[in-house]
Length: 281
Image 1 (spheres, helix red, strand yellow):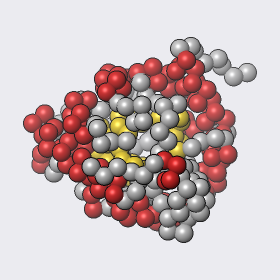
Image 2 (tube, helix red, strand yellow; image 1 turned 90 degrees about the horizontal axis):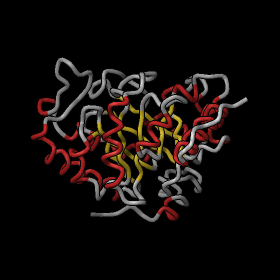
Image 3 (tube, helix red, strand yellow; image 1 turned 90 degrees about the vertical axis):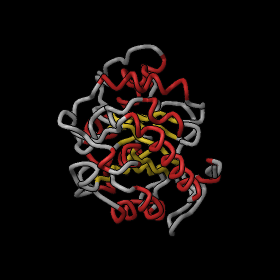
C-alpha cells in the first residue's frame, strides 16, 4: 500500500496556490478538539474559523453531506476552497456522501489535508440500508469483509494523493467491521450520533466501540469521535479512548467560541490525566 508522506513534509507543502505551512493530520496521541464548521455562523465562516485557530485549534472538521447518504445537505468543495487561504489548520473533511471515491481528488485539490469516508458507503444502498428502526445506513455482517476491502483500496488511493485517510463508522456498525482495513488507516472516526444533522444528543452506547478499537491502533493512528461532544460528554469519550474530539454546537453556538474551545480542551486533558475538570470561575 502507498503510504502518505511524513508529517513534516506534508505540513510544509503548498497546494493549489495555498500558502505553505498548514498542518496535516497530527500523529501525536495528545488530545485535540476539532471544531466543526457545520455549527459555525455561515454569514462569516472565515471569521469563525480564525477565532478558534487563534485559540489554539489545530484541526478543523468539515462535514460534507450530499442529501443521499444522509438526509441533509451541507457545504462542498467551493466553500472549502475559499476557506483554505484563510487558515493553516488541518482541514479534516468528513465525507457523508455516496460514492466518495468519485470525489476524493477534488476535495484534496480544494485544500483538504485529511479525508474520512464512511465504511457504510463502500457498499451500494441495496446492500447497506437503515431499516425501519434506524435513522441511517448500516451494514449487514455478511458485507463486512467486502466493505473493508473496498475501504483499503480507497485509503490507498487517498494516500497516493499525498494526504491521510480515515474510515468512519455509523453508531450501529461494530468495531469488527473495520478491522481488516485498520492497518492502512490513519484515523478511525466513530459517530456518537447518527450523521446528517447537528445538535444531536450524545449516544453513550457507542463508547464500547471506541474502547474496542483503541488497543488495536498504533501510536501514530488517531481515534476520533463525532456527535454530541460537550462539557458533560467529553470526559466519557476521552476515557473510552478517543483522542480527537469533534465539537460543533458546544464551540460555536455560544457567545465566545475561543473560551468554549479552551474549556472543552481542558476538560478533555483532565479526563485523560484521570481527574475531573474544575469548573471555571
